[in-house]
Length: 248
Length: 316
Ligand SMILES: Cc1cc2nc3c(=O)[nH]c(=O)nc-3n(C[C@H](O)[C@H](O)[C@H](O)COP(=O)(O)OP(=O)(O)OC[C@H]3O[C@@H](n4cnc5c(N)ncnc54)[C@H](O)[C@@H]3O)c2cc1C
Ligand SMILES: Nc1ncnc2c1ncn2[C@@H]1O[C@H](COP(=O)(O)O)[C@@H](O)[C@H]1O
Image 1 (cartoon, rainbow over the protein chains, first blue to last red):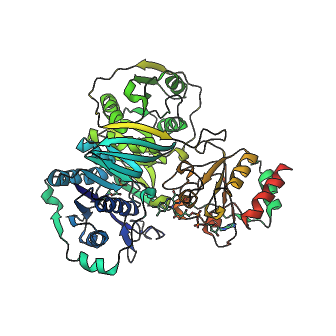
Image 2: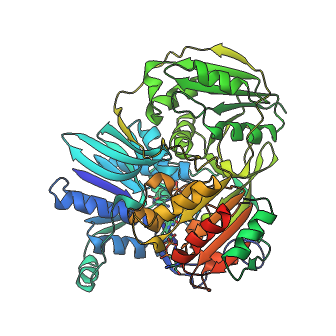
């Protein structure tokens, strides 16, 4: 069984993102880039499935510029078998990403696609659901526990009401929540070994589809700051302040 | 230009979720010609009645079918597609229900989606947060195709219950996929405490509580002020409470009148879930904790003394 792991290169989650002074976008120069944290969890889950003997090959895929090779190499060092870069310099919307991934699915014929529930830059939370729709296959989103057996997957999903358990037939799209697992650290020898693993680059234009941009950004701004608060000295001052304001 | 909006109702099989009333408020800001609400359920009678009472709703469409007992995106999406061609916009809440469902609807219609609308400029221009709410973008959508979007509940008040919309039954004739089945819903809640997403007061605890037993302090304070209980991701990961109480980028996004953060450092992923609250109170023993940057009232103190003292002071 093959597992496909789409991963996105994003600004590291520890970076405090700032807007360019000219308002053209966010500051990227010299900013640390990483694999989207949810995607790293998706890959870790695939590695564990393979280590249990339930999968044979794990392919990491990213759509973006040459710089994305860095994240693919990290994925290979974690344990993926091969990597595919679909190269484009355009910022693509989730529907186009999902369509491109569908082309790869048709070529690779995986039983599982595990991906992040959300990219922490655009916070869209769409691509997995769109891919499942285009593929006409099941989706299990926001998953915190996954078990496979005989062509089905049982997924525990983190939903607002608690934990929902669903069963889906494979092939299917799974999107990971943070509690699915804790990704492993890569060790130096693995990084060296990963340099020898295959990494193919496919120009986006070779997918036989044109990217479509539907939404345009009119302006970009920093959210309004909250007015500066008051530091109180003790609990009784705090209780009084809240009571005076009619909050309690 | 005409605009006709369809809202996908969220419910638990018995009652309408408050997120639907917030979608209606957002829809009204578009000044549309009509706002319809569709209720997909096994038996939608009660839910449809609640939806029809929401001010601004023109019509409620009841789609009753046994497969709609559980909200599975794979079976709901094709039913929504059946209704889509009469509308210029289809809106759903940006709760886990809407986030799961709406992108599948969009993909089946061959269009993109706008996630987490927090402000309406006009029928095709909206504000939404990115980078965990650190950046706000104004986005323009094309007016020549249907717009699929999710609505950030914390940004809109619930529509009043003074409406009286007509209710129509609709039966859908499409083949529904059988590849997905619901097995179980495990829920901690069902308690008598207010619901985290609708409460006007919330008391949240973080990693500092140190254990599930100690987390009882948070429940005690919440009960004294009649509030709901929330938690940081660290508290959920440590097993002090269930995931349904997590506040933040990957949990619930809430905006109560009062939010009390106890032993929470204030990571951006947590702040994005609560920074629109009316009044924010933080108690933390580290005076440099980032939570103090957004707190209206801050107190540097050990929470194991501060919480019992606060309970005593408020009970007086
Ligand atoms: C992609 C992603 C998504 C995330 N989503 C979320 C999310 O939705 N929600 C969320 O909350 N987090 C989220 N996180 C995690 C987030 O980054 C933080 O790790 C988390 O919020 C920390 O929780 P905390 O404040 O309880 O713990 P800590 O950061 O460990 O803070 C504990 C605080 O308690 C204080 N303290 C300790 N002892 C005491 C005491 N006795 N009395 C008073 N104060 C004390 C300390 O000074 C400290 O400030 C996410 C992270 C990632 C990468
Ligand atoms: N450019 C990309 N390349 C590969 N995978 C992507 C890309 N963009 C998004 N994804 C995948 O889709 C998931 C959800 O992204 P989004 O819908 O943009 O929030 C991510 O966690 C990735 O797994």
